[in-house]
Image (cartoon, rainbow, N blue to C red; front, side, top):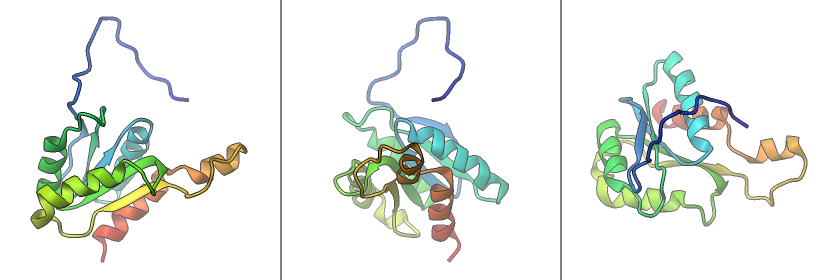
Length: 148
């Protein structure tokens, strides 16, 4: 579980509009739901290693704000998609397809995907944590992409 500030006033999240949670120049990390927090934690640690990561929270999958994703990838030249679900059949493949179609000429490396392990979700808390992506897996994906 996570804890944080909750606004007192009424607010509306724009439907179909992604949110750039962190501005960066070296790599775009695209995530949604709980993986946004994981992506932000990874970006913070990457900053300490001299890598500037832009983090995009998709917020809604349909409609998908492809313009924000594509603009970021065109700027950074690198993309990592992070999702909690399995890689097979995961929504991340849709984002990869979008980047392939709209920003291919701007990519300096193949788009990377960090996803849940291809196993049924374990009941044990420790095994569940091993099956879900964490910041270390995101960092490894980014560094293997940038440090060739």
